[in-house]
Image (tube, rainbow, N blue to C red):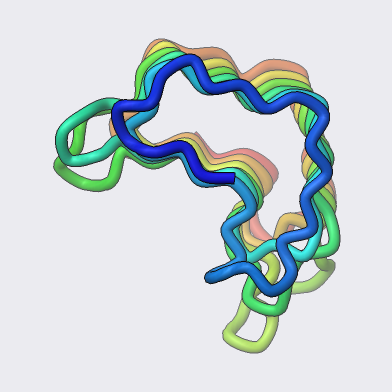
Length: 169
């Protein structure tokens, strides 16, 4: 599923996505979208699960990633949920990452076990919510909120089996 820059009010409800054999195994990619929601979803065999970026010309805004289940990482899995303004681009504004369950692969993050990177990463996000998520076996960090992220909440998250921090802000 791909949402391109300048798209608006795009909704995916109840999708079941097997990302096996997709180019770079991007299950869902939304770049520069203003008004995007994926709800009650399931993703497996991914390298990247749900990825949201601001584009070089437009900030991503009004993003909803709600009540999903991401599991069974692909061979080169890195980020199940990633929101990133990409250095130099506008901050992502008004994003909600709530009620998601992510099941990773146990063990320390390494070149031979790269399936265990941060499970939810929010970089350059303002006016955000990251609430009621469950991160299991999230290698380095279960939930990471960084790089100019501000004016948000991170409540009632449960992170277990992380190699480093459960949550890092």
